[in-house]
Image (cartoon, rainbow, N blue to C red; front, side):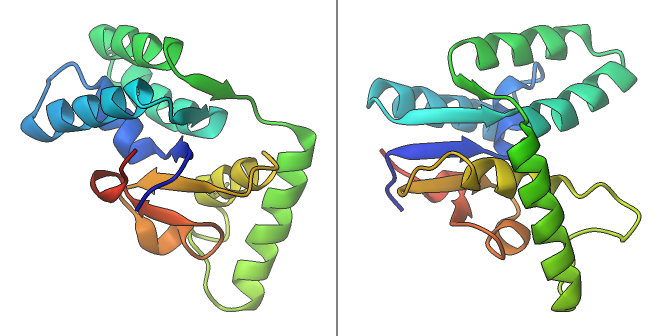
Length: 150
């Protein structure tokens, strides 16, 4: 899968910023570096940062937080907007009306928010890089991070 804009979900963002540097984390870091080197626009949605960061803070993983900040510093950051939150509410409602929710009814549903952030970019050619293609592909173009190339 080839795209000129790659939007990171929490899976690849967490892998690339993991201080433990597992084999998969190293591979994900190399993948991100290759995208940036090929001038692919790589975007970190604020909701993905929030989801990864909150777990690092809960676990008091200061090295992980520092590494997350470093990874984010060399990528584009997409803040949450009112437009995105309203779009997320629409996606959340539609998924439930179709009987295909991506989270519990009481959950905030980060997938709907991330998809909405992507949709509000006003970019035709994008893909969300994820480890959970099933949930995100209900809303937007999504692919396994390891299958997305520059």
